[in-house]
Image (cartoon, rainbow, N blue to C red; front, side, top):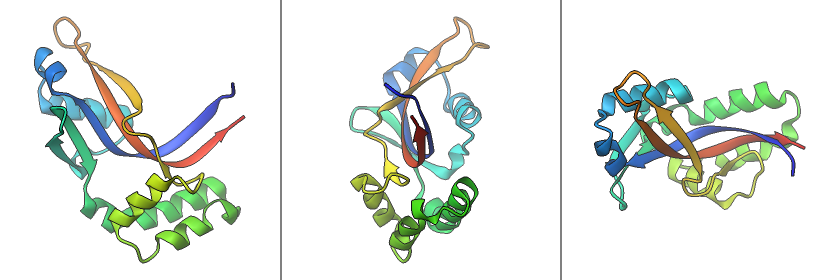
Length: 151
């Protein structure tokens, strides 16, 4: 079994409403911790209550429409350099499509350097050490993989 470095962009994250309420946490406390842990700006995400009574945050359509292709171009050029084999077809495929179509393409997993992770398969535990009894909260997330390196 090898080791891999997964580089991606967080598309969605979620946590249990029940666990949230049990730990007596506030949404601002949680979003600050998420922003710090994942280097994201939670204001770029819409929040809704999911079908399992979880809080689900999804990257806003406006956020993707405004900067996503420029971000991808910058990331791929910086990460892969002149090796356009890894990303040129991705950028060509996404060009002229809507943000909804970009997500659908990522979900097909047809490109190594542009694919959606499985349904909330990644788990991270947020710790609130400064609160009484040091509560923690499981955070589930989905990311769009932009690079997968390993052996």
